[in-house]
Length: 193
Image (cartoon, rainbow, N blue to C red):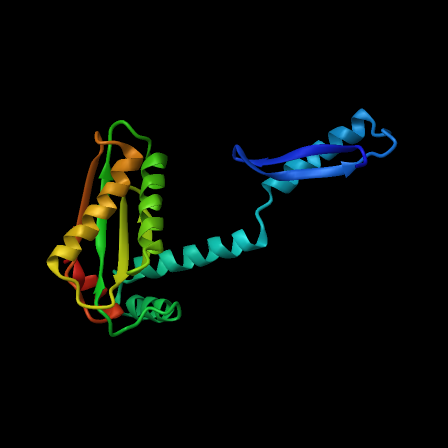
């Protein structure tokens, strides 16, 4: 194996990989090594095209979920957008609302905890979900395959609350409310009113 200079690629404290530069004759100068390390920092800080696309998709989905509570025109555009993501318009839809309050945690940690709960909702295998986080509050839209019973809705609220308590600890105040099932995306705003 030829001699090489290895510069770690790290972003936000996370190891992403290694930039390797072959230095077969050990001729790299301190200046060149500094440039390689600078390039490694730039490469690590640059988000991938896949990450940029995923962030744009998430933002578009969050905006659609927020718009479901807006004006009739906003609700229809949001419903069209979510239908494009395979949300069925004639399936039982439920909107859990979550609020988190804590004097011990920063706003950034509260938002991170809600995004963790959002990821849990969106990755659930039995329920299709999408969510939007705003400050201390999150709103989710869940599409169930069959009409959920009150017991199933309570269990789902408990699962979301447990996710938040795992992140924040028992000293935080977590409130999870689950709306009544509605039949169409356009009616989601009635679910929790």
